[in-house]
Length: 554
Ligand code: ARG
Image (cartoon, rainbow, N blue to C red; front, side, top):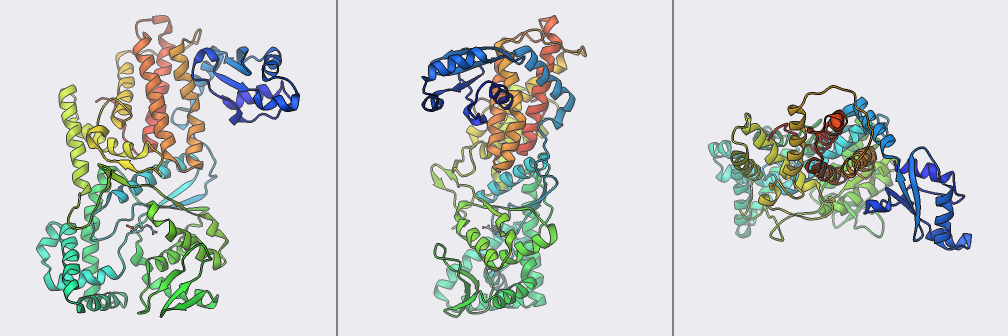
């Protein structure tokens, strides 16, 4: 609608208008849109007031009801009926496709996301990466991109040498099977405690990793087992979240693919010896990127450089995203710089999508020193709380368990996505589950409420818009914003725009629902049901794009 307003106004002024110049007044008596004329005053040598008045006198259009000049602003009131009719008609026709675009033109975007570390707990950071990455994938898909979700598992590195040593010394097969992550983590912690007094342990760890890299069968079999058991645990979380991946190629996958890359770096004369190690210098603003340790072992960065090249060759991406916490910014800056120095122009397509921490009582949640919070437990607690609420509010609901799962998990997803990802978020499970306020359950509840209206009345009459009251108008204006929001969310890789949109639409719908007789005013019934149906469509689509479920009753 804003663009339409710009196009209309442009016919009446020689000033070059742009969408961002148009404001949306908070108070509806000031119009649906307003154009401030202050910036034109100097050039036109007239007061903003006069400019606004002259403009207001000229403007005329079938979409516009009236125009007023107030204090240097041109306030524009849209013709509500015409506009409402177009908005409802188009959503009615396009249904779930409303708001789709072909921005991506089928281009592949790889999304490196989740990527937990084998034998370690799935952390809150991995949760954020999973949830944010999943929503970005859905939003990109809606805009005509082809997202590829990659779980770059942390399944390689010197820590696995240490783990092998620890297992051989103190491990118990049965315990690993029963509780893989806890047991392996405990072994790893124990290794470090022992290594403080027994220095030979670290050497043994290095040697064990070397044997792994060299393909020793016994070592590989153990490693494979740790990996499978860990992945089974992670899979439980992915099932709860409803997230799937296109690839589980983790760091280990690149073990035998790094040599040619290191050779290439050598040939391009980029490798520099530094204290026995090999590094690439990546400019004054970044520390050198470590490629090989003095003992010949490769590093996280070596594997990421190799993976990036492999992904480019396999997927021909137009964009390659890495949804990883803020704390790894330096690593991704180095990755990009090394690829650039290697002469890969596509290094420009690499983009780190950073996010903040999850805090509890203002402190970072720690997975170290036994103070671990297991994510699966957290998710189950949320589901439990949701179940209690349902039991209290709607004890007769049929599929209670399923709905509780959708609400509990949805609450956690929403609390993560509602703020811009760069912010730290406070983890307060009770707050997340409230049905009032800016929560996932509030939106799901609104959705279910809208669905219940359609269950109560059946009416297939064609709607006619004869009059649009203020409550209806607010809903229509919100509905109309959807396509624009979805595109911006794709361009900025920002699911919070969709989350905030869902809150906005829920609010205006609830006030419409509370103030306008939907069922008790027969002549307006088809029209109001069309509004309700449109809200269901767009709220449902918003929830889907956030990776949340939309129960029709709760
Ligand atoms: N496994 C890493 C961690 O837990 C995250 C990996 C992110 N992806 C990547 N390609 N580096 O910190």
